[in-house]
Image (tube, rainbow, N blue to C red; front, top):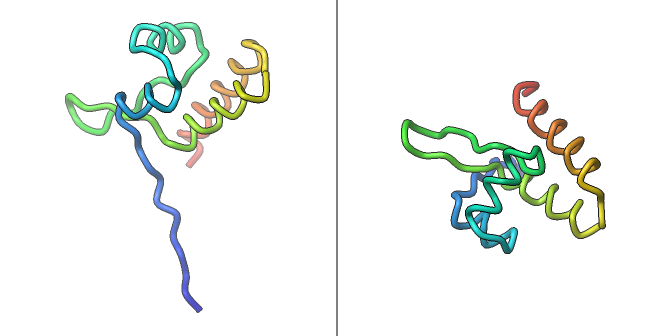
Length: 84
């Protein structure tokens, strides 16, 4: 029996912007407005986003969730970071 381990994937800004289909300014505006999770620092000058967070927010957008629903999701995702 083979055991598989799920390794969390971190996406750099270029990949997040591509996955979201938006520009850098809009992305950071969304973060300020609580519509997207803030980045995770992975070293002094480098940040990234957990891939599952990007996927969850994109899925919610595709499903037609409202901005208020997206904000609740973002809060839940950020809270889950420290719960692990």
